[in-house]
Amino acid sequence: MPRILIIEDEAAIRRVLVKILSEENNNYQVEEAEDGLIGIEKIKNEDFDLILCDIKMPKMDGVEVLEAVKKIKPEIPIVMISGHGDLDTAVNTMRLGAFDYISKPPDLNRLLNTVRIALNSKELVVENKMLKKKVSKNFEMIGESEAITNIKGMIDKVAPTDARVLITGPNGTGKELVAHWLHQKSERSSGPLVEVNCAAIPSELIESELFGHVKGAFTSAVKDRAGKFEAANGGTIFLDEIGDMSLSAQAKVLRALQESRIQRVGSDKDIKVDVRVIAATNKDLKKEIDEGKFREDLYHRLAVILIKVPPLNDRREDIPLLIEYFSEKISNEHGTAKKSFSEKAVKMLQDYDWTGNIRELRNVVERLIILGEKEVGEQDVKLFASK
Image 1 (spheres, helix red, strand yellow):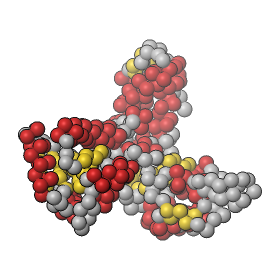
Image 2: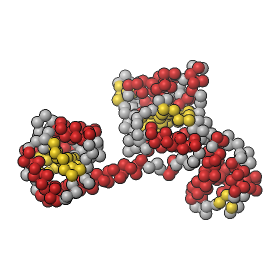
Image 3: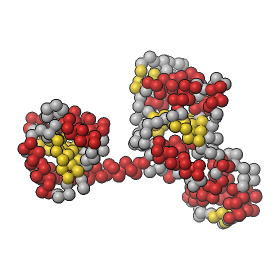
Image 4: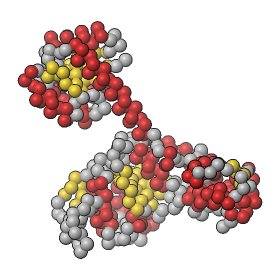
């Protein structure tokens, strides 16, 4: 049953609105609030599908209510109620996120049409939000082993928060998949996910890459340039292989985490950023700390939640599922019929020593699909999957 909240200081107007809505649709549950402060308390403590809000009210006007609701529960559509002298303000509220406005005294058809459209839009917003939280098939995490089940459960708990996460595990285990799951299941999923491979960027360029630079900061800085932290504003930054980051860059990342501010290289101006940080490494950071290669204070800032991704050799029961998944995916990519793997072929692959983890398994499956028979058998594995 749709719940509608009317925030209006004139009792007569409230009665008219309640009467119109109740007579039009018995399924509407209509609540009232005589001023903005009471309305905000109701919105904080209860769930509503639509808000009708007057513009001119004592204690807290409609514009302030609109701005507060957009911070508390941005998905709720708000229709502003405007007197004749409030029309300019009503139009301006649309720029602030109001769904629409209706004039006093309310026209019956206009009011009902606006309410119906606004309620439908609320359903679409919620549905779209749920769809965004479904992880893209490109980043599926395949497996039913205890280790993978535990990781998925942890992601579901951690993703909706802004807690920082440190993902550890050997190369090729799928640490980036965990990062994508965390972002796509988070409240930031509509924002950007910016990935930075710290190991692939020369140490002398990492600070510029992360924080940007101003013109003239160094020889090749011919113009101002925003960094990855600014690009990730409102979303998530994924610092992959953070164990390879220089100590000077680590110090700046630490400051960004502590103060939610950064400075471009060559500038003393602070830039505020709203970014969730997810980091990953294949290194033992505690050992790196002991050797003076990684800052202990940064480690504790990053490792609020620690997720360890196991090597493939520790989750061999997932290999048949991974073979099936890769077989279908690779066949689609090559535009060929999907090939099956015999039980003996799968068993042989399960017994391999997967030092390259899932990345290596995918390469082997692709090789077997291209070079193997219609059904990949043990002879194909012996010929084409040898180390």
